[in-house]
Image (tube, rainbow, N blue to C red; front, side, top):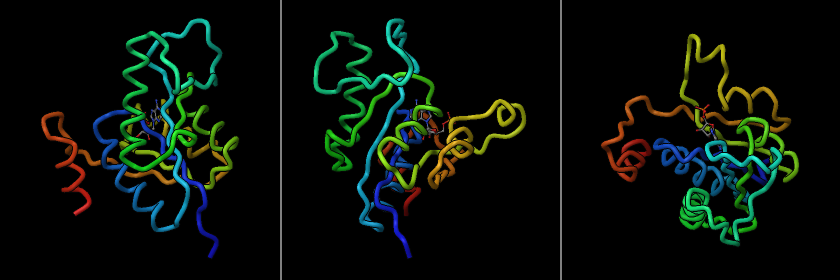
Length: 163
Ligand code: AMP
């Protein structure tokens, strides 16, 4: 069977990320695949930047908010053993930018979290939906646990969910 060689994990830095991270780690180990990570910056105004611009991770921008986002990516990258060359931060709309990077980097599996939305939210679409519909490679949507609450430490959630 053809196995996955390069997996891209999409991170929104929300609380349930830790659950998706554990799954991605196991899958990458299982397939002995290279693992890359991406966070699309969609929460900091970047008026002079075109969508799709890759943010330099190796130099200080002087913008505290941006540096905070970079340090989150660095922390997860370090935790997963993902080297700097496989860490991506891109300015834009998450769905299209994840799909674009997947094509550019020859990704054969994209992993996203899925909230299992229904009703109006589903009609409006979500990042998971967007990637699922537009990516040329396989996409794995990890159903995020509904019961995650903001009071519970991340490590405990991950341990409970993977156990
Ligand atoms: P959403 O559809 O926005 O609820 O997000 C579902 C999943 O899409 C998240 O678990 C991530 O895997 C991915 N995602 C959402 N927003 C971003 C983002 N800004 N950067 C990277 N991945 C994202």
